[in-house]
Image (cartoon, one colour):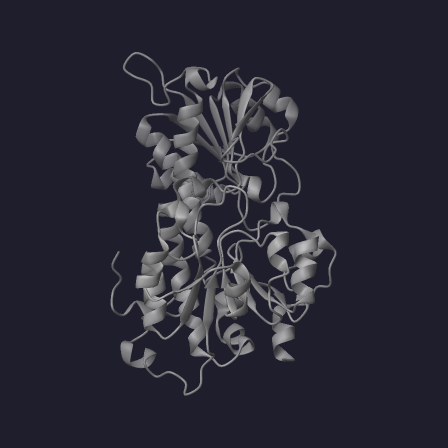
Length: 406
């Protein structure tokens, strides 16, 4: 997997700089050692860095330590990482002791929290829908600076890591729905795209964001009838223009949701990842009106359920049936294609990791990088995201105020 030689010149918030400008590095920079532990969350098969990504970091004089077996589910061997320049750690204890930056996909499990060294930086997903107060408190006690994939944001409001993973989730949502409509899986026995003389399935997508975009694209490509609903009329206008009116749009209110539930063969929850859902958008009475053998794919389960009947499932046990409707509510959907997802995550995460070497201290890094500052949810013993503070009832301070007094 190749990368352009001037890959390091990419800066999300400032655009492409000239190579001459990029080479003017400060005389003193932080000595960065990045550790990538094996994922211990249930059914998490992705890794944050592919061997190719490790090689790019090592070529920039960044030490990378990888726990043995970390890339197993992606078919990345220890030898692949070693040849890329990584140090292979035989145990997680050994790995955590050697690094000042920990990069992983899933939030830390409780067993991992004891291994963190005070003052380290953590970069991973957070998953607001299942956030653990115990985890947040443990990280605060160790003075960990924590950045969440969900919050890393460019100056134009883009969430680059979330977008990348949402593209995969949107495509997989349709692929998964098509499978569970099959008779052998307990579905209604409908071919998603239909054939000549036989109407296709009707797919309703709740949310006109990135997941919705890619789900709609794949559903239309297979020949399904597609309706997209959202609360924002301008987002729906963009969808109509993008798809040249080949789909139907509607405002996400109780009336339209109830109407669409009765005729849909598939309903996909694809709401915005920017905040935890306060309550399900589709209530249980509406789910009861869906056709027997129809399918719900709740992609929003990471942030809280989109459907009142949703509950977390896993890749090992992905579905359950309630009110005659098959529910698929796996939080880490992209993990089903772990290798593709790991390459995509590496491509998106790499420019942010490269920024770490441009400054002397963590406060410098956060002060000068808008994207990393926006991504921070723990700093100096405080929660720096209001939504997280409300969920955990832990002390909140604005990141800018903390940096100003650093």
